[in-house]
Length: 264
Image 1: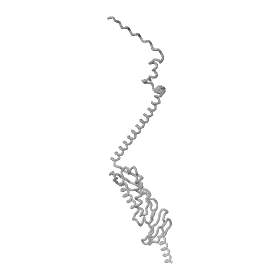
Image 2 (image 1 turned 90 degrees about the horizontal axis):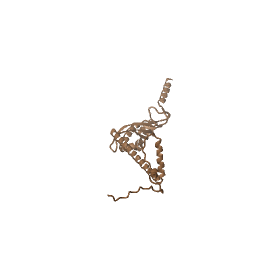
Image 3 (image 1 turned 90 degrees about the vertical axis):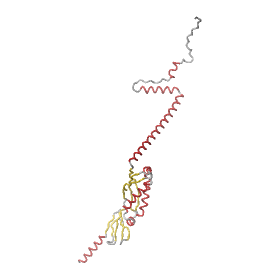
Image 4 (image 1 turned 60 degrees about the vertical axis):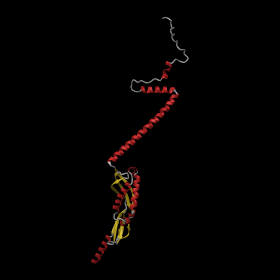
């Protein structure tokens, strides 16, 4: 009886030693006597104890922060750049067999790729064409991690730290650019206003009454303001009839000049 019980317990322990549970986001890479024997999917799985060895690999997307890198751009400007990468394992067997630690390998490859890609660009490109650099980083990283069965979905540059003197120079440049645009807009406004005034003067020149109506309108606008003494020029057309005689009226008689005399 005892031998049977021992055999049963041994068999039960042997069976329990080979039981493995894999989550939905995990895959198990099986090595039988050191050789690759297949991949186990999610669920309750059993392997041969002391013969099989299972390595669990996660299939969820991994978000990894790339440490800040000191980079010298193509135009010899020293900057500090950090980024974040998004990747996941597509082929668990390659992630285990082809590289010792795919997480560490991806991190180191991301750092070197970040330095090489950003170092090949100028400062203006680094600041203005970030989307292009992100795409170049993603392509370079994906090409390097493809043998490991790792797919790099995206790379995003998080922050670019510039030296203080470069920040001051860029601030002065931006201020000068804003002043230039303001002067151009102001000059264009003055030009358009002068064009409108010239057109209005042409219209008023064709009709003298328009100028008089404009004069009266200006007086009405001044009257609505606070009381004050205002000297305003009076159009000569309004008083012309008081100065010049009316056409058709006889001229007033002129006084007679005294006759010269011969007295000594």
